[in-house]
Image (cartoon, rainbow, N blue to C red; front, side, top):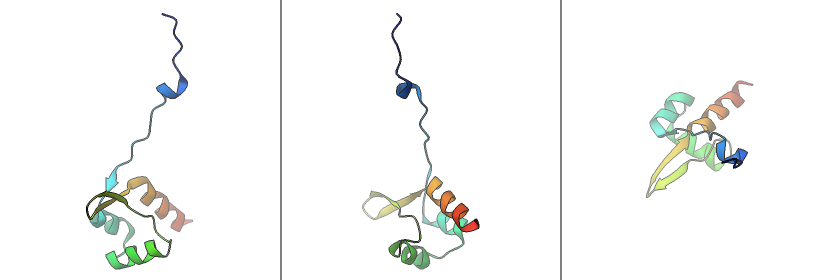
Length: 71
């Protein structure tokens, strides 16, 4: 009783959804080769490696990229 709970322990963590290439293409309106070329040039967010050759992008990274283009 009377124990203090650390603030960090009670903070809610934002969980982001991972999206695969077809959805990324649909959202940004770019083709696969353009996305991968822009990633190599540092113009597009890099994906998260899921294992093997599987990758996905953090939904919030894509949303932020889209918002940056709209500015």
